[in-house]
Length: 150
Image (cartoon, rainbow, N blue to C red; front, side, top):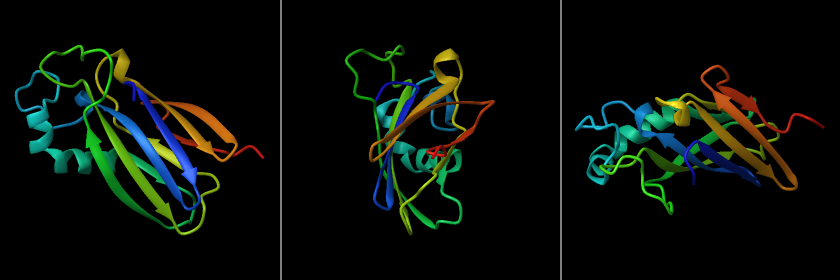
């Protein structure tokens, strides 16, 4: 998963998401103040990262009830090194949301923007069967409802 990107796949009653979250968007996680998250800091603050993700990222589908489960928080797997050699500039969060019925028009809200131009937006590509749609979220445009065109 590249920095500033996310994917969402709707399959049956579930939405599967992979989201990059800037380290600078997270509070009280960077213990040494170096602007990055080390593996030790991630391990120590995994619960705080999970809570901040739950508070800063949501998906809904009208009155369709849902259950969220955080699956995994990880370091990004890239071919290039982080711009900060002391740690990670961003984390990758994999999340699953189960709905009571298949979601038709999922609305995603994202509030985890960090510092700097590489962390001021999130490009989210969504797919649902044959449908695909891409949205760019920013601090001025926090949410997007997918698959509204019929």
